[in-house]
Image 1 (cartoon, rainbow, N blue to C red):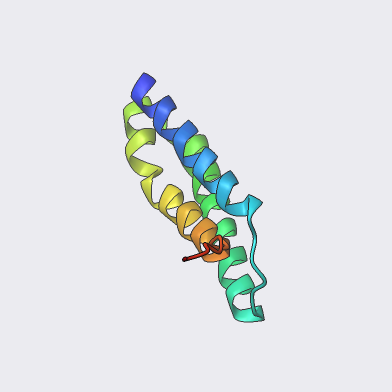
Image 2 (cartoon, rainbow, N blue to C red; image 1 turned 120 degrees about the vertical axis):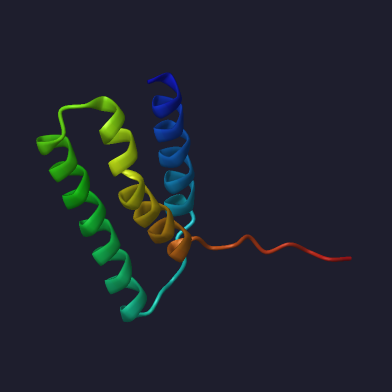
Length: 84
């Protein structure tokens, strides 16, 4: 269970970092991100309500975590680096 806790913390820190540096996006990208976030929240709520076994919850939440990661990466603004 400690590995699952560490995995969750690392994922949410990465997603929070991506959301911290947002880039300007077009309407289609925003709709995709909102759809991914709604999918992740609904799936995580459904898994939490229905699944009584911790090991199964850890396995079933992988698609929701993947959706959160993709949503964060779609909005991530890469820092400009100066090449000399």
